[in-house]
Image 1 (cartoon, rainbow, N blue to C red):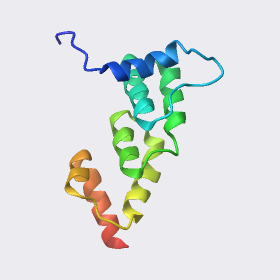
Image 2 (image 1 turned 180 degrees about the vertical axis):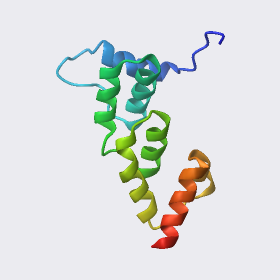
Image 3 (image 1 turned 90 degrees about the vertical axis):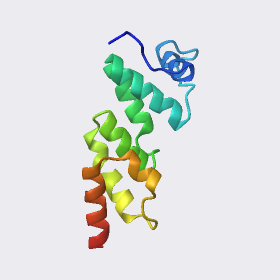
Image 4 (image 1 turned 45 degrees about the horizontal axis):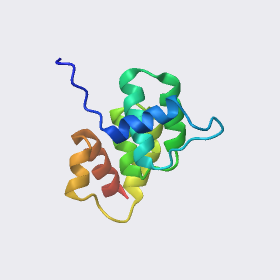
Length: 117
């Protein structure tokens, strides 16, 4: 490990806005990308309360595929059922770019469930 951390300036800014808010009554972050960055950094640096806040803010806002990817990346098992159901029940099949984002086991489960419907 050479000490390099792959965090963009925008991601760090999103995370720091939670640590050092300008307004303690609310959060300045609004986009899925901003909250996903907070989740990533909080998970990496083990800021559990900030991680929980990011999960809370993202819950219900994520499309099913992104929900599955983040659930697997940051160990959020509670998101898995709704992610799988959303992907299985959607009208269109997964495209190659989407398939590349998820693991083979999840892809097989999704394909099997879609075939069963």
